[in-house]
Image (cartoon, rainbow, N blue to C red; front, top):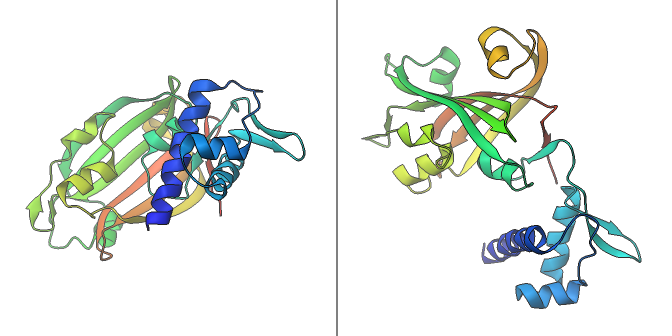
Length: 239
């Protein structure tokens, strides 16, 4: 766990270093110099550069070095770890904002009630959020969260602000409440109010993600559906 934490820390610091001190086309210092700057091993630097190359942040040319890539027109959404939409897209240099958000106490939809094991007509919170990337509507997210979580009421209102993600909210309520997530992806056509929210024509193709979030011991704690415009943001799964 310490090794993974050190590698993630080095990766984050290398992202910041590139963003602050280099421009597209610039050549990065050799791995040895980067390792000294970040105070990590060359192996850790090499692993971080492999990840950044997979995300198209850098380009590695055999015999020439590693160069900063020009930002792609479409942002990449890295799905390799549990992380907020804001942080995933923002890591690529995009500006993520929250255009609209609402929160209501409802009878959960049948699929969400089953996924969250909610019985007896118990209520749940429905949080609906519309995100934008560089000012353009990009993702419409609908989350169902039990009104009572681990025997205590949960207040989802902080999610109405960009600064608080679902995962942050859950872990503030109970440490370890958001440990992993299972996501199903499919291409669908979007219609009506949802299409208008994303500034799309009725029937336009989008990526639908249905996700269940689980706590440390495997307890389901949130269930949601999101619609994402693939002309602005695309999923990237790196293995």
